[in-house]
Image (tube, rainbow, N blue to C red; front, side, top):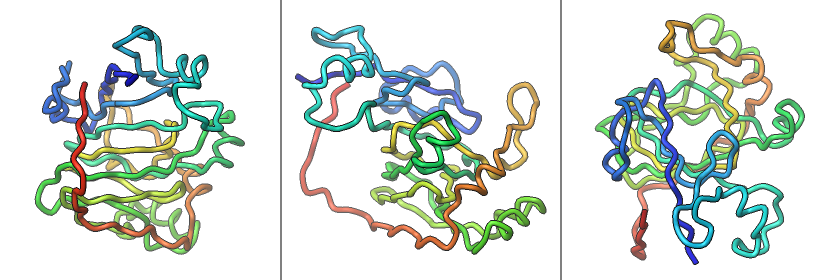
Length: 237
């Protein structure tokens, strides 16, 4: 039996209104994320059909594992989102499992992948840097020149990108993307374009932790070109 889930909408400083194109009712004009499938404590999907209606995905995962097959994980392993980047997200990085377990109270790290649903002409993402050491990145952060060492990639709809934990990255303005990731909400910001929140406070950065987890000199992930649809599927809300 399929489980239909109530979407969780997240307001973000950089968000917009394009999630309304999926039939979601938005409360504001800065809705940046729809958490489509989530058992994470920061937003747990509620089941809206069948005998489990009204229960949360994390509870069903815990109490009815037979519904999910034989997957050896204590916690539901994935989080999926639709991201509407009206403005650019921060320049950031996520830890791997071992660092997150040690420094973030046993949480998971985050590797993720993006499918580009739509993109404005010349829209870009960032995957990786040109820096070869912690000292080099730290120097650029200190002097406000980190944008000069980022690896920019122009994108178009239909492309797919994999971003391993430890890879500096961002989604820039004008992109609508579908994300599949580990069930984690840990983000270490390196740079946020000097933006302030609604209370006119600078948004916090996490520079030391970010420098800890960046994979320096790691090979950059492969970029998969625009794909061909070989079978149509349907998604029902």
